[in-house]
Image 1 (cartoon, rainbow, N blue to C red):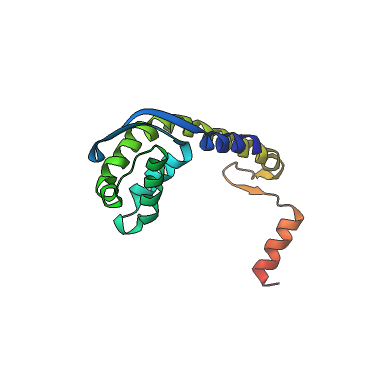
Image 2 (cartoon, rainbow, N blue to C red; image 1 turned 90 degrees about the vertical axis):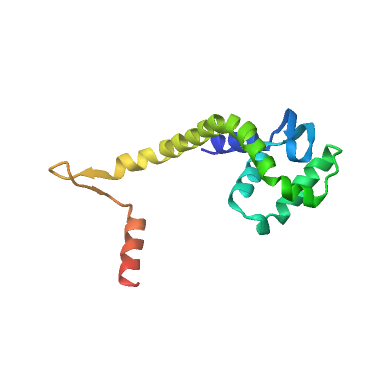
Amino acid sequence: MAKEVDAFSAWLDTELTCPKVWFGDLNIEFDMTVERIWVFKTVGDLAKHNFSRLEGQIRRIRAMLARHDITVDEGEIYSALPNIEEWLRDHLLAYHTSTIAEFLNNIRWAIRSYLRPEFVRAFRHEENDLLYTFDLPFEIGEGCRMACIGG
């Protein structure tokens, strides 16, 4: 499972270059180079928070633009936030969603493979096949029993 998580983490931390990023409200076009995780965090933060909670995000956007030799007033970024979010969401996030889904599916399968031997050992069908139980390891079963009786 660590292999799948490490692969996803490395992919998220990889820089991507997106040519001709257009933030129309700021009237700027540039070739943006950022880590993928920056894009996803930015889109997520802009989508879920209102303007009063976005001061830190404004600083991060401004810093990213400064790394590209673009100077923009903080107030201009506030007014351009819907445009910035829309561009990042529709062009970058949408493009990467199938890859994100594949990474998450690989992690899910790794978890399943890790848990499968214990599931096979513990799962028991009742006579009518409609009910089932699990044979808990002694340590877990004893811990549950002690917690239930307050011991």
